[in-house]
Length: 145
Image 1 (cartoon, helix red, strand yellow):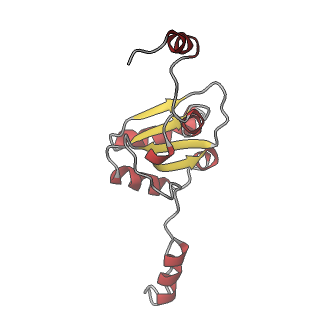
Image 2: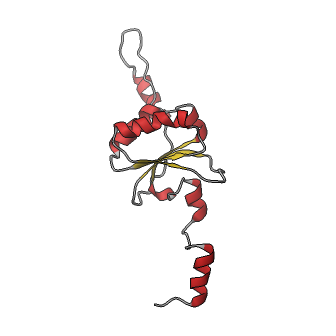
Image 3: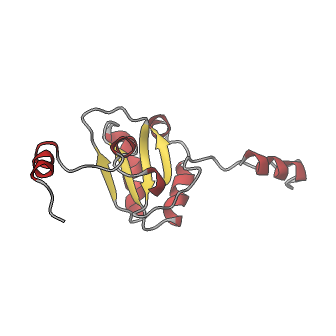
């Protein structure tokens, strides 16, 4: 169907229409339903759950890592090296107005709709004096997840 001259002029002035621009801005250029894992800027600074992130990279070898360009390269370098180690593509997303709390996103090219996209530390199971894991420790570990 041919477009009207008004649509053509409007697209020329304002650019192509985007789907969910606020969502894409928040999630470093991707949609929420495509995210496997996300980390806040603070979690990226603290290098929170790097073992868990590495495991997610192993579990999703076709994913892409998006990094917030407002974070210094010295901090992002560890995540870049991790992506290179697992042969994942990565991008540093820089925006003029950085108003997103998201620091890192592991994303797919298709919709996955994962409910909980935040990383959680795997609970450490303690051993009693005999060196065995107690039943109570196992139950605590289940409910901490």
